[in-house]
Length: 114
Image 1 (cartoon, rainbow, N blue to C red):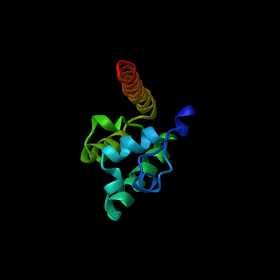
Image 2: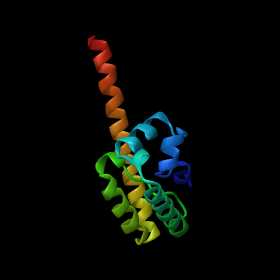
Image 3: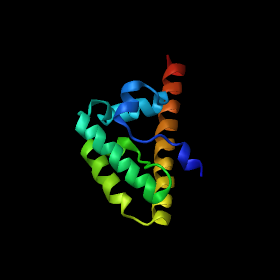
Image 4: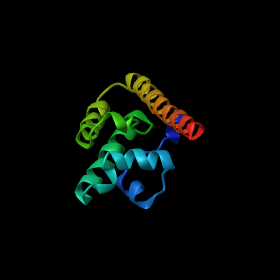
């Protein structure tokens, strides 16, 4: 599945800079790079439980959530059926794509106006 190419929410990935620029900025804006070690470990555990249950990484448009909200959403969505969760992951990718495209169009418009 193409969903498996999506990066997990990860404090260590934010800190190491191994994400794409967009993912780096989004995850940092949610405060994931500032997680205490215990919180980072908890996030990794939740990600593993989710991936084990559904077979793909947890995907969320982090701009729609607080840090606490992301943890709650990850825990909640782990319990859903995989078919429902697959549909939700696609919906979240749609949100992410629209926000990124809107940001690029806005940036391009600003450059043309200057």
